[in-house]
Length: 172
Image (tube, rainbow, N blue to C red; front, side, top):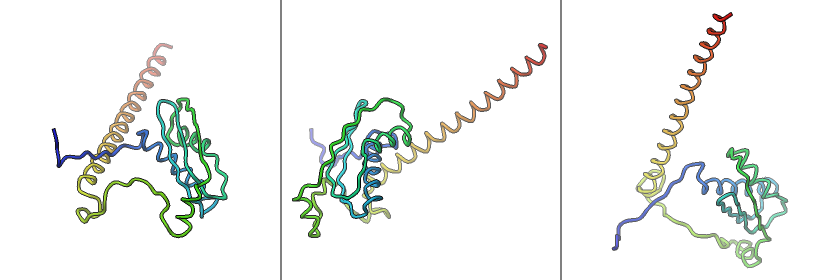
């Protein structure tokens, strides 16, 4: 069966594996640009089931430990404690791609989805904007729920502690 006017838009939250991998790639890029502002970095990260693969091509004078950055993002910034096996394969940028970039070209920059449109103030199409707003509302609801539960637990713990202390006081 064919549905010619149907397509799906996905928008994931901050702790989704896709977002974590994007954060790792972005952090590696930041490390290169911090040391060498003229770095050209094409970096990707892929993770699944306690394995992370980081790969790409780089032209830079910077020296970056991609595995260490990935581990820091995963454990310190994202708060994960699970063991993680990290494999990196970062090589010198292909001379063919470098030539395209050196002469003002765009290199081999990959697959893009979407387009600019005047449907919204952000120049996103309406479906993309709605999906992003729903994800943001969902994230806010989860945050408020956790905050509410934490405040209840904090109150319950205080009351429990007071009763316990009062009971101990009466027993002596």
